[in-house]
Image 1: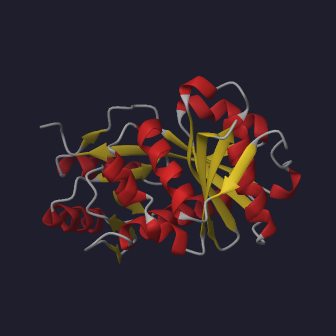
Image 2: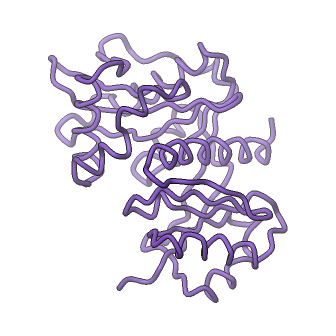
Image 3: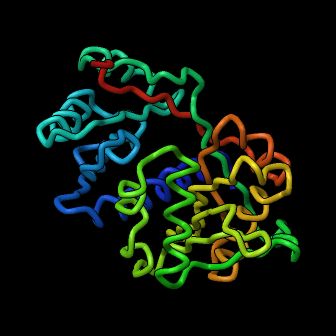
Length: 259
């Protein structure tokens, strides 16, 4: 499968996962305007109120309408433009008063195919699929700490609705019975997307980040997925490359200017 096909699967999975979060929120919605998709969760984080471009020749007016929809809701928003296919829309983002996100490094969308080549996590890592309120509480607490958000906001993002979503597979990693790491797999078509990988600072360099990723991928493969995708932080990119992932897309974020 070539990079363009993998990039499309990476984006579709990302939009599916974001859409699941949005639909779990009161008043959350998703929609399509021409070649533009918007996700509106109402959460106070731009990551969960996005506009993405899904065709190569999207109309700038469609971008404006999608941004207008989120602004009318009062959502803090983020427009993601693909480096290359969406370069012609950067002027439109500027005309809308949006500015480049603080991180000027384009966000890499990465893919691994076929996933049968990846090994499962080492057995010495105690990784458990979240199936009950106790495991969910551990996931929420680590999500809040790892991503620097309030616990009540973390619960809105990864609350009980996640356990009822058959496509979602949340995990918590434990060391000596103490929760220290999390990850989330989300299945969409042939793709298992890996999200929310976080490890406590005190537990890094023990292989937990790789193990949590491998667990999500292994379960996705068992469910019939053939491709794994993720969007990487700068810290995690080298880890994922070592696992066999390659960058198939890059995104530039545009947001409202700081108040």
